[in-house]
Length: 320
Image (tube, rainbow, N blue to C red; front, side, top):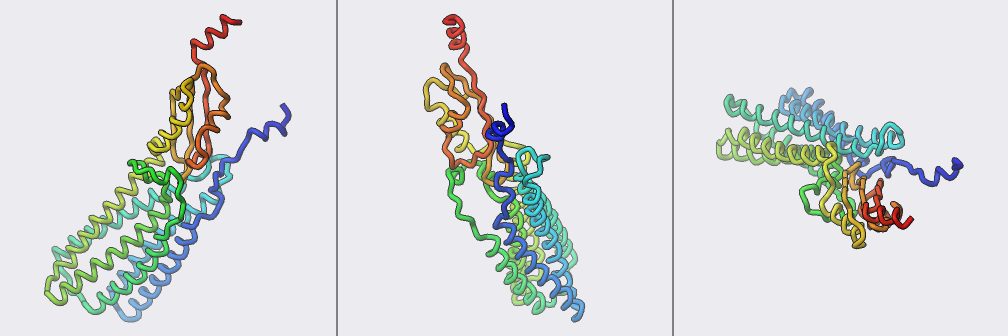
């Protein structure tokens, strides 16, 4: 067989990962906003001797680091999309970035809980007006970041509407991690404002620490949800039930054909690979079976193994 003919049967494995994702640009914009706010707070805290401003500036720095992990994952996946060392492209870098972001969220939640319990046991003096100003300013900044990262792409494939417990497979986990970080920051600011106003006007100083614990619990829950969804991708758990059902129904539309083995797993956001084993009395070609599957299911790498039913093979031998 000539080399030019072999190329007809070969295909790339980038699966669109070489393209710049919308989440990458949004994350970089949010990093820029976060860094500017961080510098302003650190400079102002140093100039005015405000520990509250310095503490919030360092807090913004921790989120800038977490967001930078997400940005790095986007850039790495895009630049290495054509690297042959990645068997199915770099789609899972997205899930790995999301998993790392979820771990950082868990650390952030733990820090919030420890700090809140510490202040509950050993209350410190609060300069209410300054603290409320910082919390409101932080809420405004984080609100803008939440809006930037929360914009949804309009992609409505059949897989998108699968409501099984595998629903998280088709999300941009990296973007979700960045979104949850700024959402956690916004939540912290809201809880802080409520606690500070309550403490200032009703004297409930303990509310500041109590709201910190409530925030830590909520952030921890978000972290667990993201860890579960990203780990499913990283561990190659079976793809959405809706997708697997559609593949089975498409292949077995002919009563002569039985799908005996099916493996579907995510190799990137909204993209899947599948290995299908088929048995039939009068088998079709792998290409014909592939053509039976709807094109808008997000399947980018499908391998079909075809077997003739033993009884049919035996009859052919006798006829021969």
